[in-house]
Structure formats: structure tokens, C-alpha cells
Length: 138
Image: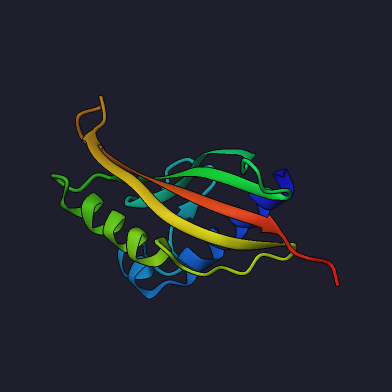
């Protein structure tokens, strides 16, 4: 199960790093982090929490919930919403190749935008649901 989760994270990361709309918003190379470095330039995107569970009734099937976070210091929500829109366009119902699993689907679940307690940073979150299945061995 965890192998599928790791392979899915790597595929999403690479797909986003290569997406032209994401690069237009987050620079080239796109500022996408698992753990942002100290002093990271805004705006940037981070790979957030993930959860994997058995896909009920399907041997080898796994349901994944994953979150992506956007951080911006732009005055207002506009920049975060543009980046979340680019993330949606890049990932919703896209086909990704995983080495040992098939991606059955990848779908957007919800997005949210809010101001952080520091009063100057806006944060957005996009949650996606993915389903993977072990590839058949021939």
C-alpha cells in the first residue's frame, strides 16, 4: 500500500513540475516542496498530508487522499486562487504512469483559501482522491 502512495506522490510531483501553467505561477523550476527550505520564495506549493486505505472489495486496490498547499504573500486571495486553479487543471482526471500500479482515477475533492494568523500570508489547500490498483503480472 505504501509503495503505491510513494509512487503516486513522485508522479504528482513530476507532473506538476513539468506543467507549463504551474511553472508560470511558481517559476522555473517550479517551487514545489515536500518540506520548504528556510526562506523559501513565495509563492510556493507543498505536498501535504496523505492517507491510504484499502479500496473496499477490490484486492490490490488502494484509495488515497492527498492534500496540496499553496502559500502566498500577495495582497489578497487572487494569487492563491490562480495557483489552485492551475493545480486543478494539471491533476483533475489526469492519467499518470506509476511503475507497479495503475492509476484508476485522480479527482479533485475540494479547495479552500484563507489568511494565516501572521496576517500577511495566504494559504490555499486542494484535496484530491486517487485510486490505484496493483498491475497484473503477466
